[in-house]
Amino acid sequence: MADLKVKFCGIESPNPFWLASGPPSNTAGQVMRAFDAGWGGAVWKTIGEPIQNTSSRYGAIDYNGVRVMGFNNIELISDRPIEVNLKEIAEVKKRYPKHLVIASLMVESKKETWQDIVKRAEDAGSDALELNFGCPHGMSERGMGAAVGQVPDYTEMITSWAKEAARTPVISKLTPNVTDITQIAQAAERGGADAVSLINTINSLMGVDLESFAPRPVVAGKSSHGGYCGPAVKPIALHLVSSVAKKIKIPIVGIGGISNWTDAAEHIALGASIVQVCTAVMHYGFRIVEDMSDGLNAYMDDHHYRTTEDFRARAVPNVKDWGDLDLNYKVIADINHDLCIGCQLCYIACEDGAHQCIERAPITANANAKKNAHKMEVYVPKIIDEECVGCNLCALVCPVDNCITMRQINTGQPPMSWNQKVASF
Image 1 (cartoon, rainbow, N blue to C red):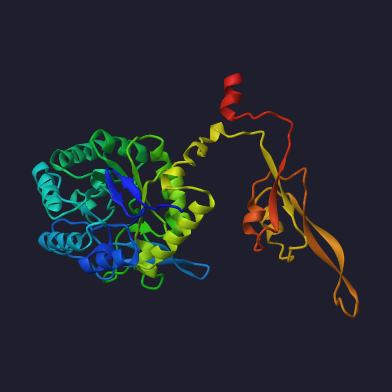
Image 2 (image 1 turned 30 degrees about the horizontal axis):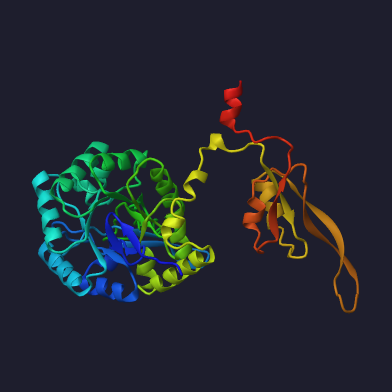
């Protein structure tokens, strides 16, 4: 049987599923309900000098009938006093000693201020500390959050301040709103960080009401840039997690677009030891962790993985620079006409949006199979094998599962990448 326990920076988590710092981890009551539901840890909503939030503060994008595919917020850190948050952390740790409580911290960029909040958070019982270097809105305008996380020297400096005072593991939380996140990760590692977590939210503007011309979410007819998250950001998060995994030696906490066990497993396969979830909990509630745990358990049992370490980072070596991909590898599309419903989406997509590798072939079909009253000519899509470039578009737009698949063609050529080709000149 699989064992979901994770050893992380010298501390043990009951499983790899943590609440990310945000509205679901704002109070002791919420965190304790989360632990009752099965979450292994919780990163407390960021603690700092209390602020005043706006109303409204959330926005979302729906897609194809699915609500909240992308989520945006202009909410800032905890609006509750530091003393109240620390008192509640102590209460949670007293009641749930085997679960992990991680204090997320953000204060002004002064050494004595950072070291003071570090000591106070640890004295309250925090198992680890997460330094919030990623908040892209509100706090960054005050010289905190992403304003720190976008500058390697600041990330390294403040991480080192925290490490000087800390007795527990220090996690630096990274912003994706940079040119190269690996530089920031390496700066955190130089500063002594025990781990990094990523990604924080992506700078965004959610939309505009075309009658009032007020951006969303609306605050008295105005709005501001906010942080984008939710299922839509998973591809970005996976890319950045894998990029950081190649550059640093310290553990990684994966965040971004995690809604189910497969999302979590993908983050782990690309290098994450722990995953954090926020938006999916805001949408569906704490109980989603039950399906996540069951699904990950079943996957690991099926593949004979005892712990998540058995497949962590297994996908990282397969993430290559484009110049290292095999240019002599070739696939072409195959259409299963027994499954084809004749919608012509593949033909339209290929003809107008790709490489004109599909033709419509006429066939004669019975209009009424029982009475065979008359026959009619219909058109079915047919791949032009010699023209197909194997781009996958037809398979992606096809509404019928496994109707269009990609078949490998033996080119008779040895593997050859662009970099190899250039080196041979």
